[in-house]
Length: 513
Image (cartoon, rainbow, N blue to C red):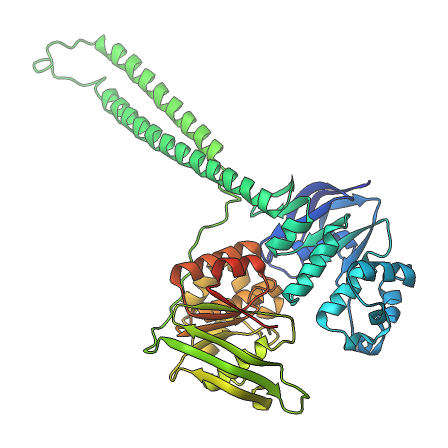
């Protein structure tokens, strides 16, 4: 067992406004199953690239005697026609085919997939092949960056089962179910500090809630004590100033009981009171010092808002004996589908990738005469009943973020958003002021997703359709969004594979068999 030591590491990208990581210190063992947790933009992927040696630290050092490998491997356009076996040599040249096949068996894959062109494999199959290659050679510490993004529920369960039997890795993931199932330690990039704890996400979160509650209570106690001390100090100071003014100048006819030697007595008493004021001030400084840092890592409890509209009909979507098929396809995506969405419902579509979840969304958007063009709608054949309430206004988030470019000011103008309100929502989703000055091409994938979520939240609608909205979104923002949905109860149709999210928000789940 070796150790990885990160000592006073600071890193910023060339031309960046701010540091991604500042004075980072921690030590971890290479046989741990480590979950890496933090807000979007806190530097999780950057930290992995520093460990990998892809970047050099601006300051500090990383010391270790182990070798690293990184998931996901890159696949270029030229690579798509190559077999996974050919690409495996490029990804990890020391891996033997028999070693990869052992891992493929453990992750539940047909060996034949290794010898098929990579373009013929589904996204989930590519992920599993890459993981098989990643774990095929012993003696490495593996850096795994969000392996379940875009995977359906079944594929996630397979990956979860595979990783739960492994060790010696860092896992970056926002999937609470996955982190709980596979990790025995967590490395947390807090707002101001970094901590390493034994346990999984849930045990860390339980400890965090207790620590945060204690910090808030201590903060309140210090605030009250500071307030009391300030009042006492102010009262004593005013008394001292008033008393000091009586040392000289008095009228013997009016103050016949005063004598000149009274001045010394008054001076001594004033000096004593001034000393007491100084003690109050010192105690205030100590209280403020003890208060410093208590709330530095507490996640801001900011409630997001959504502005749902009320429709005159109770049932907004009705599907009965529904089947969808694309022109030229041999068979329908599915048949005899039945479900309805009433006002206040939050319906989650659940099924394997390719089963038709996104196609249903496209069909509904087409029927609702959605304002933007949705690719693929024109080739979609709808059989059976799909009724959409007339005049339905839809707010839609799709999976694609590639179209986001330019600055936020121009984005607001193009979409007719009130800029101050839009930026306020992003701020509540943990965007800093420096992010507002950047172009969206510089955002992380999680930050781009937050732009789409903010766009949806700012749009008043009867129905909110979100297609895999949480890919790349950090854990804390996921919990904010869950709270938002439960508070405002908008009518929603959602495709999302996060099991915890489904459990929290769904009023009904439509299963695709």
